[in-house]
Length: 286
Image (cartoon, rainbow, N blue to C red; front, side, top):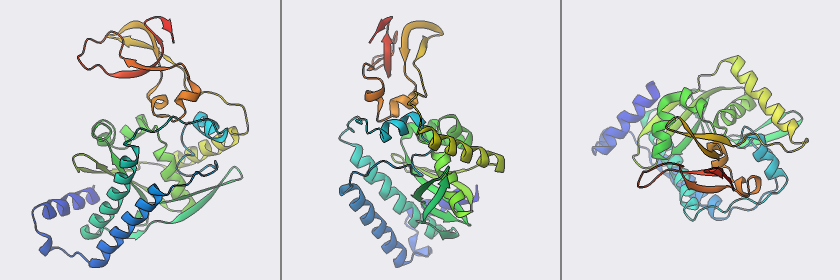
């Protein structure tokens, strides 16, 4: 992608002290600093908000939305959660500065939008608009960058646990603009990947339909979207059942599966085995 090549080229030149050969306006730096300040204030003084369907959550599993609407207790975040959130905001600000320097055609961004979904007003704020297309900036762990984002749009479709595709479609549809994609930064290595949203009109129509279904379902009874799966190790059943990766990321795991335990993979002889959330372990119900 041309945008990705531009970003890499500018970062390579900045990494080799060639900023004197580039146009870098002071107001661009001021803009980035202001974005960091706003991000810090948002994270440090975040208030508890009543439940509402937002662009950022509308495409998450409906069981998560049900839990949040019912006010079920969330699992406590680990101590480093706030650092991850601040880091993400700072990466977004820095990436916008890099895009300015690269000469990307930034046509908008930080637009507060609203979309009517099944009679519910869904609001949100997009990240950045390039060539009149809506893009999201994401910071990713090395694992997610290498195992999901590096596979492009197909990789995201395989594992969109946080509803990023629906979120981008919502921002775009609310403004009658095309979805552009995601600018993804590996928070450890600093590598950057631009993932284009390979969406046809029929795909967008289906996603918007799924949003409508999700909103309507919130007036119905709670239903789990995922059930424990039989575990295989070296293609053989272990006698254990474990939850999906999506459940593992859910803040309401403790409310939905109160007896689940985070245990080493059944049968693994590794010195540091991978851990999973189990509801049954070696034939025993937890």
